[in-house]
Amino acid sequence: METHDSGADGPRVPQRNFLATVLSRSDHKTIGLRYLWLALASVFLGMILSLLMRLQYVWPAAHLPLFSQFGSAPDGYAALTLLHGSLMIFMVLTTAPQAGFASCLLPVQIGARDLAFPKLSAAAFWVTMASICGLVASFFLDLGTGIPVWIASVALFCAASLVNSINLGVTVIDLRAKGMTLPRLPVTVWAWFINAILGMLIYSILLAACVYLLADRFLDARIFVVTEFSPAVPGSSPTVGSIAEWQRLFWFFAQAQVYVALLPCFGLVTHLIATFARRPIWRQRAAVLALCGLGILGFCIWGEHVFESGLNTGAPLLFSQLAAAIGLPAAILVVSWFGTLWGAKIRQTTSMLFALGFISLFLSGGLSGLILARHDLGVTPTRDDFVSGHFHLVMGVAATFAMLGALFFWFPKMFGRHLDERLGKTHFWLTFVGVYGVFMPMHWLGLMSHSGMAAGNPAVTLAKATFLQSLITISILFTTAAQTFFVANFVLSLRCGGVPAEANPWRATTLEWELPSPPEVAREVVVYRGAYDFRSVDDDGRATTEDFVPQYVPSALATFGRRNRSPQGRGQTAPHSPQPAGAE
Image (tube, rainbow, N blue to C red):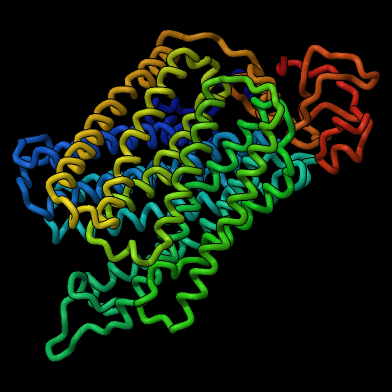
């Protein structure tokens, strides 16, 4: 038998074009960055929509873009509100912290080479892209066609998010590096993992509900007998029980969705505070248990808003007690944050400022939530201003601050460049002042109606309300204009190069900084300790040049790494071994 060594007759490998290469890439870093780009585009589109809605509210007779085809029709304005909410809830607050940051960073934080199912992750991204295209397209369609397109788009989004949740959960359970026990996981991984479990539950419920709605409309399945979605049978009337079932399934998703958005943000903020305070997380295990409690209670209070939807008489008491109990794990997290910051030498970077801003917004929104617990506030006709201010402050703005802090922190890891700190701090302070100028007056408007001020002197009340509405409009314009600093910072850092980043510019301890920037294929690592070991002395009590010990540096004290406790104050320290190449 002859053998041809020249290779002239051998099979030729076809050259793949650029588009095929882009579509087929499935590594976790590429998929995570694609989700973040998608969320970034969605947040700016959502901000433009909110600005247009505000201008239409202030000047209803003005001819504005996207409004000309609707005029003053309430259906058109409602469609615009729906599009704004869909983009911000689904594509920004849900996609960015979980599918974006988690896909990009979770594998390298636990020492894995990739996600458990990379190709499924890539497929989920393109399904999400189809979902956002459908959401936007539904806005330009007539009502009869737009509603089914919107429901189908939400169903696609839930299917993709369900796949991502399963993928992240399996990755954490199965692909952790040697020595990466559960107590040694960074708190960010804990938050993503808990959120993945929560996502498996709620996305499957909403996906089923969306499929049922589409079956009602196109197959006359009559699962939810509502006249808007299925034709009524002559001589019959819609059953209240079926409508109540739809409401229950919806609130299974909607109530827990708040914690789907906030749970990863809690983990991101906790991680940033520990890193820039240069101290271990105060009572880290209690903080992790608090995250678990928030996930469990957040899912269990699904009936808080459906007291009058066919539930038994004991349901209001049960769900109100569960809703009140959620304040306990939230308080534990807040105490952990302040305990970490107490007496620390804080590095006032842009990331840290956004983390502190998150705490401020979360506490402000939490206090307004206590006011909403009053039943008599719910009967006031203009309470929507107060509810809108509370909801946006806690879920929208606070979560955005956490994501911006994370972006400034991991930008060197993602792109190998620094964002400019001066532009970043300017952007923070302008945005911080602007959002309080937008949403605090909304609280005031709601309380004015509740307090009965209009009955005393209607003219004075109208003048005050007009002033507050003008202040809100000016603040929205101011906040929107402030985002130009972020856009300029982002574009200049990517296009003009910016400052090249070190391998570990923040002197962080977690595994992702052991790799070069931007990250390449992860090599095998062994974990010897917990994620937050900050110290400034060696075994002999002498000062060292570094104030941290990475997780992959060996330690002579095995119990220290197992317990994930800081040795400070006990006279015990682990040897500070030299860092490996690439982690300078």
